Image (tube, rainbow, N blue to C red):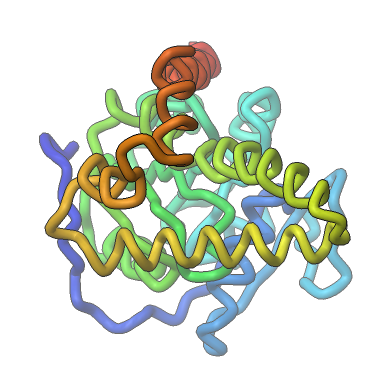
Length: 271
């Protein structure tokens, strides 16, 4: 396990690997979209609920495990026990198992699979497919094959080593973060429609606002977010009036509470 947070890149070329997906929901789709940019990667999957006509389907989990260099466990937390039980009987001697399942610890994977082989736990978000995910990474050990998984994830965004005790908070911040931010942006979009424009036009304006704001933040990294807000909020002006409401009604605390609730749910999923 890693004792602190590290952002360091391994500076290795993207590996060519055989990727097997158990389950093919949103995260598997995002992983596949990001990984297929390396045209030398190959893919198979198995899924009871989300068939994909563009991928080769494995006969069963054992067949998938025998074929793959990497198995991605892309199932819901409620399905984890059943899938791990099936995977337990497969030959995993030449396969790395990677789990993005919220709340499921490496020790649980080891106990259920009945193996002390290297296992990887990650928490990405759906921006994998666009190369902009923020992904937490923790491994039972860091051998050469595990490093290949790390490098593959680096092609899809920022990867950081994180101890497992930080995963619940990370999940709430960066796994759930896109949905939380989109909920806020939806408020802006709904208000923009009041201007008399279409929903599509409003969405385009909000997207441009977001891009401009992130560019502003990115170009002024030496300043804190609080300092950047102060540059927008003139004394006695429109922005300051809105920010006073934000502060007076403890909206920041509501956001913190939302993140805490999500963190607690991540922890419950692991029990």
